Figure 1 (cartoon, rainbow, N blue to C red):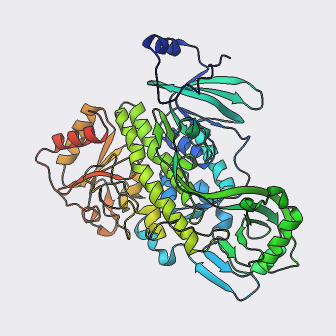
Figure 2 (figure 1 turned 135 degrees about the horizontal axis):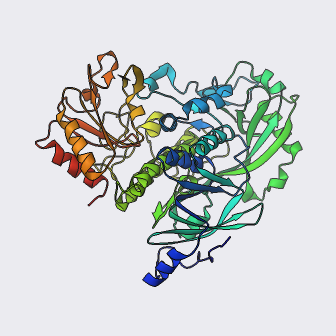
Figure 3 (figure 1 turned 90 degrees about the horizontal axis):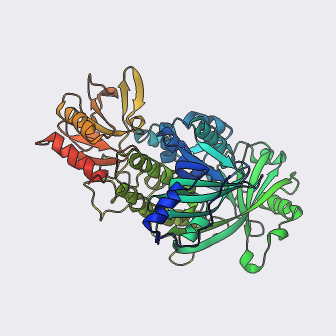
Length: 567
């Protein structure tokens, strides 16, 4: 097989090739041509593969490791993440994979598990079932080693080309695409790839981000831990009926965080690590780790069999830019966050969801390339606000090993649900927003405001009960009153003229979508029976009209042309 020469040091942002050189480049033989190349096969890369596959976009994913993660980590999947997995058809399989921890809730803080110094920082993720007002789903505790195989299976079933033990050795781009050289780490074979776009989901030390010379802002490293997996059957007896997500153990002689894997014999302990004081990973011998765990738990006689150790670093950093030319950062390559609240992985998965529909729209000719600029405009402010909240949460919860420096963590950013579900895009592929409003508002404001996640409403369609959120994935969606056909007729004509996928639904008594219990869809969406609400494929409100339009067709034509950067 042929391979391209390594041009990775020529400067990604300065494309100085002549027209003849570009023509020669396009005529060269390559092993693979593909619309999208994804580098990184962890949670974010696999999610990107699932989302692109659902939208019918051919892609290649490469991951340098031999298989998905075997270490239990990144377990908290928030309600917004579960919504996007729900619309992608993966929720049921994920919940089956997570069933062993389905009854674990809350965070316990304790001097030990055998003493009286114990306090629930919170006991229920969703006390009183309040999330049901806003969403058809809820949080899910599914460790990365259980979640990744589910995503991998679905991605491959949808036709994704996913290759493990394969690393990208170099890449370069020009105005029309990206060239990459891949290496199979098992055979040594080199493969040349030509892609329209590259998604960098290659982790916090992202070589792609480094090559693009994209800097990062933020406090930097927050603390360091060694994640220790171990087996202990007697620990379950110590815990009794207590079922937590994590327990912060605060004994000064042996602090750390205890996480159940199966509530019976398999566990994880995060022990503070201080490399700045000269402490090395070799210092964490099996004997030291076992003794540390026994002391932290307060049970000196329990059995502890160490099965694995892995270092990890908590940090707060956000990339200064999310893209360069045809290359886009997603997940940890774009942002690092303190682990409290599991914001980092959730934000990364939602990065992939935002980017996928935009790539699909551009690749299918429905949108102009300018739509891809809105990825950074929307997701970068969310990462900044969320990372500040994650650090603040670590400080609030006194996360073991974390000592907030002055100014780290930001101010109050709102509650967990507001950060997870209530964030909004004040700039980007949205019309009618107030750019001066905060990205994360105080309280939940899911009332159909442009830039916010569209409201959830149970409806019946052809005898099937579904959430309005289930409608948003494949196309733009226009919601109108069932008795008002003007908007829907206009939508059909505009979609045909612009060659854009747009589905218009009538909603109301006796309409295609009939709200459950007579709910007022228009009031919920901040409009009237004469108005309309346009929702993007990712479930965010793109635009709304609170009343009738003098010319619905010309109005929708202008809205879609502007949103999709068609002009």
